[in-house]
Image (cartoon, rainbow, N blue to C red; front, side, top):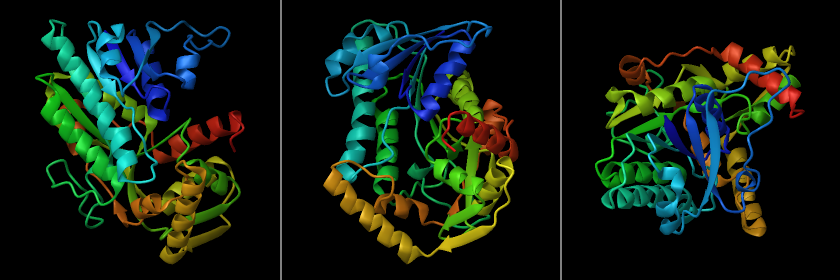
Length: 345
């Protein structure tokens, strides 16, 4: 099997590439010119004594702003599955999110359909990795959002992901597609939960808004397994799936991280909404000065404000056989161990 993967240098994409290679796939990573992946395209070194993977990985440099480079790329030759993960989670406004999430999706699909029109074999599946943010938060703790609920994104990132989903539905040119909306994803290599794990390792819990706010969460390897199933099972064609393992509170996450560090939570604080708003506006100013997105911004604060970021993964479990193998407690241990081995915590 041949897979094309965009966003393969990211947290989820890198894990997906490894999983596919160990399953025996040929994985072709699409890299933008000038990125670290494009500069260092060699196979990663194997630890001494480790078995060789069954598959192989390649790197192909393309320019998403120039569709002709995508059309001409040999990476798409006879590809069985295209996994499109490339995108942006931080931006300075609507235009940057659309440029980072919508435009590359359209360019990639346009290139594939142009190749097919010229006689190339189409991929068997196009998997677009969207986000729970495309659907918006749940109205209540007992009403997680489902795939058939009307999407209600309320900030630029979520709106851009929903628009990219529409591009997939409308411009796939007859290529079977599947859209996957992951819940909050954590695990080795993740940056978004890093600050939380650092705080918990010192017995500190600083909660954005309320420690009792709830979110759906999934360990990265469980998500990767769901992505492989979405790309290979016939039942997934033309379907949208939420992927989540369990619903937890922010306090549950901090406690699991603290337990993984063998350090009890000794100080906890719910940060008031007005303080978060001030921090977000300060981040916006810093972003304008630095001319790049910052970790804290009004958009990020807005995204974290809802009390119920909950989704229902029943469809993925019933139709694709998705199984949550890693509990929050076990996942926190694996993540903390990786952070410490890398010197991040």
